[in-house]
Image 1 (cartoon, rainbow, N blue to C red):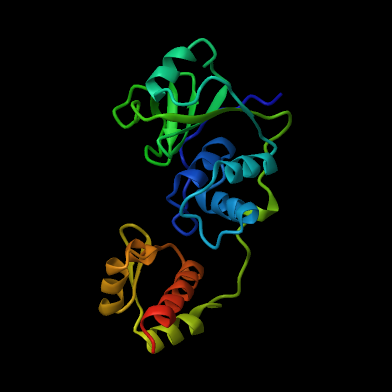
Image 2 (tube, helix red, strand yellow):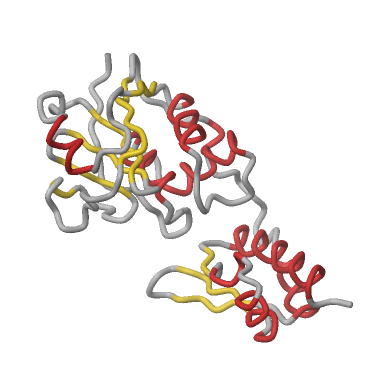
Length: 234
């Protein structure tokens, strides 16, 4: 039996995801969040991970050699109540995957980490939402060595593979990109009239602007082109 241990979220400037599903996978396996997002996509079929079902995160854990065992009598209590009730079983080396407040988090002993905290904090840290309701609790276990599956690896791509497509979309629809060097993030937008329309109809692209590399920009441009075809082009 491999002794599991939670770790801070691992991110790379050129390969990352800010959502809680990839974060918890990163904190157990040590892979970066970009790798974890690709692993989730391999089992969920999502184009981009902006939220995950528990079943997909558990399946991703399984591909890494980590099994998740559901704990009973944990549903509908607050996280604070679960922490009190589980204090005897929360020992070093036992990692619990907790779904609470529509959020994924990991707890080992009195240590806590999730996509919001990024670093390991105390279970009593103010960043821990102790009043949220627990939906599910799983204990994570591994019989052998934890692996990073091939599905998680970033595929090697020819340089500037997406350059021509991005340039074409900028010219055709007026899409823009701006690089924020401080955050290592590309800010992408549709023309202002399309951005306004996205807010008016409560479309998910209204608040989807950050990208981390050229491949993600190209993928976002595909979604933006679909939006333009559906709502802005006669």
